[in-house]
Image (tube, rainbow, N blue to C red; front, side):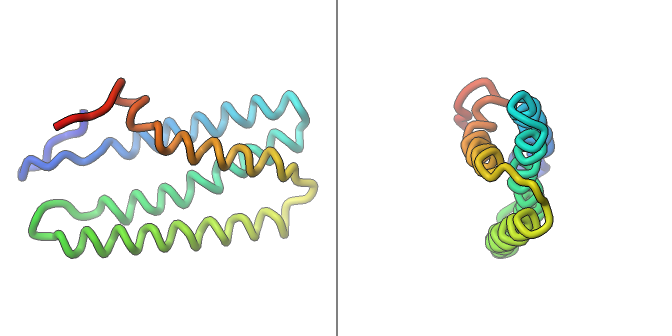
Length: 132
């Protein structure tokens, strides 16, 4: 469970979720390593192109809590999402420009798997849907 703040609002266990996602990335890298060395590091690269911007979003979005900071919370969510999109674009550009050879299929497939993993992580880590 996440720790309760003084005002009774629970913050999600974001650090645990990010570590779980990093573990999934490493697992995907090992799976693709059976195909080839290039596919292995391309998969890890694709996964971390997802996880690093997601970490930035988490740091921005969950900085504030409570009703008194509602405007700051909304603003930080928008800033975090915008930064996440920009970071993804920059990291994809860097990967395509500087990493050769690159298995594009492994990179994009791992990125897509991380998208689904991001949706399912709260369910997987909590053991079921959270209702409060």
